[in-house]
Image (cartoon, rainbow, N blue to C red):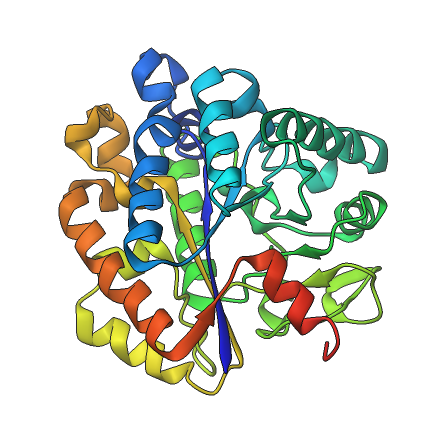
Length: 312
Ligand SMILES: [Zn+2]
């Protein structure tokens, strides 16, 4: 049977302000914690309703600043949801910081997650999905079972490049770092990376589980598109992946939020999917998660890595 995993990056709203070049002062205390306070329970309801597990990628700093977020991760872990690391500071330029600071960032994230859940994370997703040799070496040093950062999606790459170009023109440079085009050549199926060039195949100790993109055109099957595109388009993308033995569906906390949840209008203007109502997006995700459940064994990324390790 095919395997599928559903993972949610729990980037809090301050990280969206940074990526859009907006001041964090736009956010009140409630908005700062909205992803953990509102989106996490909504995802948990979705998982519970379908009887499937999921993986949350938590940012260490977000947990450090918010006791409610720590409690939410503890409860999720106890309910069988995997809590993995999405770094400590979610620094979009983490790959450029050098080996020492990178390792320190990952260590801090692990310590905070361990304190919250009682278990060290076994998986890692890079901020901004950007990997290089230093960051890969740090994931090996941390002893992770898997990484899930490669995102070889052509349209996504083009969109990110054009958005960053537009922001620069507006004099509002984004803090996001544009990945090397080499990522487009990364395998779209689970692989062992070359430690020197982790988007290439090699014999690295930490297995890479790339996020789902369709074969050929590299259409990214991620939450933003799953919640906003016409259903027939999405269904075609899902069918295009039917020969893949593993399907890695990546989402964000904001994929189940909307403007009425208390997100500042300045941010809603930049993040267009926030204009779609949360109710509609949840209904869509219930349907899409149902496709996965009908055709695949849905497991956490940690369990997928365990089951794939013999063949990868
Ligand atoms: Zn992120």
